Image (cartoon, rainbow, N blue to C red; front, side, top):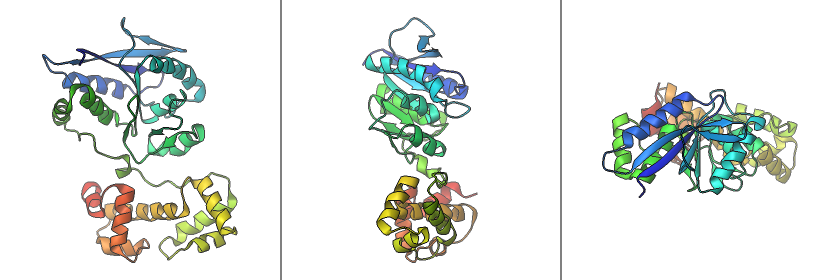
Length: 307
């Protein structure tokens, strides 16, 4: 293992300074005497060039932090992306945090691969990068030469992943313990809310969505949904998936689970009556769907997030 592990942090207009400083501190804390050292350098995006803060070669990893004002425009991202692509071609691993993935997306390197970004920007990301397999349930996706992290504070999770990779698991666990943060293993879906897509422009599907939102607790069949839309079932299924990026069954499950999350967080009812209230006559089936969707059981979710 090299004694010179350079991890570069990309500074661009609007980049979150907290992530840049926080990652530098995290890596400094992870370093131990007489062991391989992570050296942090700051690189600045100027036009279509990435200028290092000191004389250095291509870094082992380049981290793209979040933007404080949300995703940067394609016009701003493309010159940066061109330079990042050249770095990647020379062997540098590229990593993004939160909406930094929009800059990474402009490189084209995410096409056909899994990636994550902040769940609240999923719809915008999919419209700009339809070839990317976006998974906003996950907090960090490590694809070897490409790494993406979800939320704005997910730089802590990404940082620990990099410490684990280059300094080892013991160093990673010690760093997490020192900073009192969870080691890698959290998932973004613990925190994300279901935000239905309503701006797709398909009026028939929108009618069915509005009806589902009002009647979600009742027994609802595919034929009921298709009937409300005025479409034949096969046409309804195809257009519903195109409009919402999920099947009608997945959509109904996510809507119901989101209602259950609110009740678990802010109410005192037991799990069984909550299951009934959101449309599940079988509490065990509800628990299974909740766990698959959220990544935590209903009881675990309440313990962690109860207001």
